[in-house]
Image 1 (cartoon, helix red, strand yellow):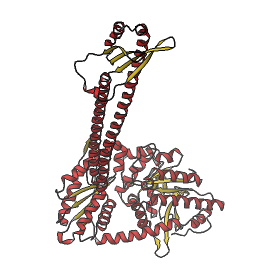
Image 2: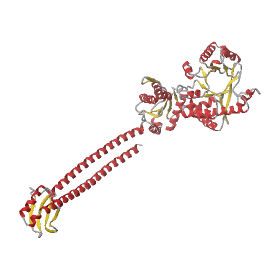
Image 3: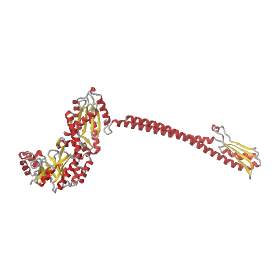
Image 4: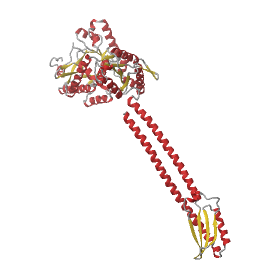
Length: 617
């Protein structure tokens, strides 16, 4: 790009000089044409004036010629002194003899009189139709040349002024080109928002560092990604997000040496190349300092922006021997830090490499399963106090052709990390619609199916639109499906009128808050979410009959939920003692192995018809 900018500058400079010369040539030609046109115009005017004066003299000197009165003739030629354009005049008789002669009195002969032959004009003197004499006038061209000289001078002055303007404009253009070239050179290697090194330049520098080999000493690569940056943009707008990015850039610079390189790779991703020689311990100190610095609040307008970051570290040559490999390793370590809870630091390791390899295999197979219908749903019933089924929770399952049944705890995190949750969510509602239709075809009145939602399903606006469109296309009405929100997976746009929560509630769908007590439990969260159902996590329910503390907590949750108009479901009930106890504490419904494990769609149909004992899966 730098070479292209230089070539562009040279072309513009050459073009500017060529245009200036062309403009000068055009002005010279135009000036000469104008002077020539003015010359012919003045010459024509002069000749017309001579002709007119000659005719007048021919009419006024008729008597003087007839009587050969030289004195009268000279007197008649005397007024010619007032005409500066006449140099001399002669009055001739019919025989061509001079009767009178007039010559203008001049102190000296002007040099312009030698530029060209003076125009001469003649007019006959008539007596009736008979020619009795002739008037002959010779022009003085000095006034004409003087006028022409003034015109030429004015034209030259205009040309000079125009040329100066052209030169000035050309220089301004060249100055603008210089500035543009400098700006282009800057942007070729820097990020426009933060002033840090940009991605392309950083990758080139990383390749150079890797190309020098281990003999230069090991270097470290830090991959930094801000946590929950979308929330900052949603809360403070893009101006607030930009302010945070500029602040992060400054704080990252403050943590490194002059020889180190700090870059913005795009969005909220940054990278640091700690130049050789750098040890793992030195990289850890820098990364720890970065985490501490980025956790400091940023004053913005009348508010405060709080941020954190996840940092992945790769060491050369221990982890990889190429620039691309180093980036992959540092990126993988960073994502591992995010999965561990964010605001954390992780080094790349062989164990992490094995996990990544396994994750890539699961990801590839899961993509095929989403296309080839490799997924299916199990259903775990939810029972009321009279042991009637009030709803069922849909739980996604995957039977791999080689590995067999793959646990959701294994493939769902992979789907979240690889941005497959939108596709997985659409697949789940499609499977639920298929099973509901199959139950309906058998004449069964199926209870409402609860489908789990993840905030990772709605990262983009189009994902939300696709999900809502699928509900309409599949004719999944609010009486047929409801949705459960995992408390630990906070929906960042909860307060937005365009959030998926608001969209579902406006369409009449019932919402449940799942795993309550294990995530971001607060009364404010319950008030903002306004769910219809609260599901108490199994952590508080298991063994509740024998624990005063668990009893107190469950009882408090029940009272709060009922005060907010919510139904309460106790999850993970596994023995009869706990079942009786949670019912005595006011839980409206229960879910757990003591009543039914997750079962297949076919077994669910059998349970609904009470034909056979459900088969657990």
